[in-house]
Image: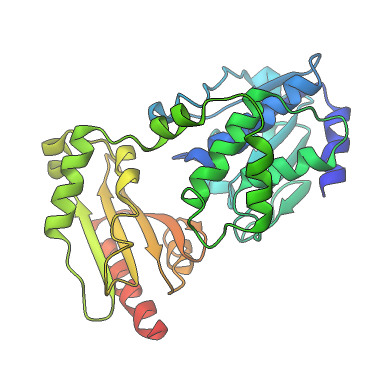
Length: 311
């Protein structure tokens, strides 16, 4: 797959790179990191990244303005996106060739080339592997910064079980490049006061059910009270992971047109639940969406069931 993808680089003068909606550092890191590799290696090619801007990740990269005409005869690459419904910018099918690069379970085998590696800690780690296996790809400081940030983000600073010897090997090589890791960590993990106060609210109000699950409901009223946006609640998702008695948990965050669902687990497999509710992800970390609070009650029941089965 890596050889086929490398061959595609040579065959196209325009390359457009997508990622998933509601991006995280790995989405940005793999998308923009690959773009930097390509720009550094093939300066005569037109390389673009597209998708809605995520203000909290603007320190990593800014998206390009890509016209419909740019897609004509273009190579389109989608990074870190398991299923087509979650691809940001639905023009991804408008190019001449489509490539999928992802580390999530391969539930949707789209693309002319479909490279999926569920053993990789992150899609950013896969971009590192692609660089190592492609002679004409040239790393630079900016590409290294982006790829490293993506790896750090998806491994929880190397704490998650997905971290392997290959992950540490990639990180050890990337830190040899000239970028400010302290500044990157500060941007990724500094907590605004309003978000810190919302964390306090969650810690004071969460409950643990006997089956080993917990849920947190963040309504519009709560978000407005603490002046926190739905995207900023991503900083809360791991908060319950250290609590005794919790095997799996869900955050239900009210948005303008839906309820965002963030699912996490320390054992029970929860990505099947996400797949049944317009989402997907890893066995222990997934996301979904619900159309009503009644649907969140269905999701909560399914969370209860997987915890009971796990026990």
